Image (cartoon, rainbow, N blue to C red):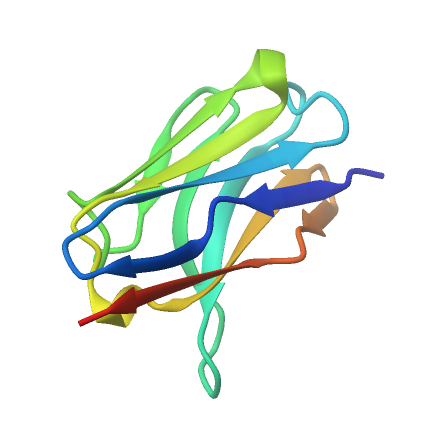
Length: 115
């Protein structure tokens, strides 16, 4: 079992930056991947960014060039640096962790971008 705790969300003006953190309750080194998804009311959850165990990264087209995912295995933490934020980035952001056939989710953190 892995608990994930997100932090770093908040209110920011368009063009601003935020950094989200996701702290895992145990080592994430052996997992397959970690990442971030987001969801707005009435819409399906959207994959935003992911990082594999080898450090490979993947991004949604809508955030490429603006968001950067990184991990610190020593701290069991994954980060999402979000720059040039847009109002359409407003959502609840969820961290997830995949290990084998198991997938774990955090409780979510709200990001609101004002125009």
